[in-house]
Length: 80
Image (cartoon, rainbow, N blue to C red; front, side, top):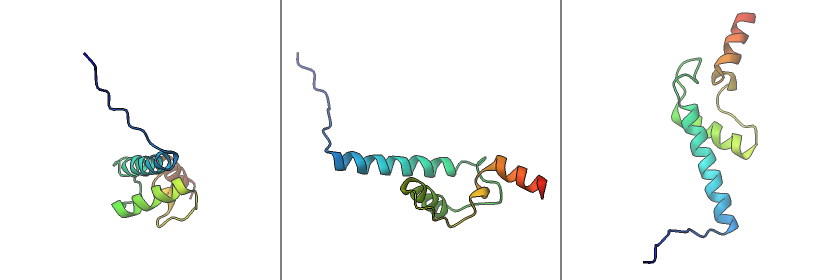
C-alpha cells in the first residue's frame, strides 16, 4: 500500500513570508505572557507592533522596551 505524505513544496518567497509571520506570531504571544509585563498592561496591538518591528529590525516602538523586560526594569527602579 502506498502511503500518502503531505509534502508541502514552498518556493523561497513563501518560506520568507511564512518565517516572518511565524516569528512575529511567536514574539507577540511571548510578549503577551503575564510575567513579561512590568509596568501595567500593554495592549495586544502594542505587542504585535513591537514584535513586528523587532523582526524587521527597524527599531520603532510604541512603548518603552523596559516595560517588557522584568529583570532590567527591576534593576533600573532599584538604582533610581
